[in-house]
Image: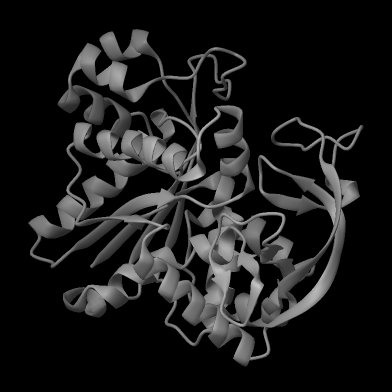
Length: 338
């Protein structure tokens, strides 16, 4: 029984949302072990991308040193939460690089990757392009509320459009693939609206921090084609773990469900790999006023401080008792104490 979580982006410190997701996955892994199943439970960190390069530059650090510092925070959280995970993967691992290059070559040989020119508005925070109609006034990203830059570049593209019908067939034949059920129509409706091919590379002279393309050393893999194969990497390289693929339950936040419920299965189909059985999107942890947490509002909750204040068992129990593991939930110190 294979339980995996989203890998955390190594550009900042862990917050309570990271703790919530990992504790939820840990509960699932422990329960399955207790009923006699052999379980493999994986977490980890996503360590490539333009945002990381820019953050490292802001702090005046070499990218590798910056990433190592941030990863330590997530590994410390893993220990502090007493997670029972069997493996912690880093996308800078050599084994992961080998797998990503192998999958790039497979998708390319299958005719699913091509070189093209991209023009569009790009948000560094989201690390994705937006059509103009999806932006707020002033070319502002709807999520990060920062201005998106107009970019013209030669990139490699993945033929996501080719997999529209196959994805819809997947959702129909496997009704448990998208979880919770109330998320299903949001994904299906967006896929029905039509899928655009997606950029999966950057020229190395503009971004060198990434995994080189095996068939074009002038390009590095960008974001999702790199990150989404980590869940497969471990089962391929740890000999006794091959039997665990594909993932039984993959747990993520609702903010990245599009990438894991659409991009991920399409990439796997292109590489002729088995698909995960279920991708579950949990909700967001909000503050006691039901506001999204952000540094600008000063309402971000540090899980390390909460554990020191209330104790580990109490913290884990309270987070898991907030409500359904799919809805947005309010976190209140007052309710914790009561």
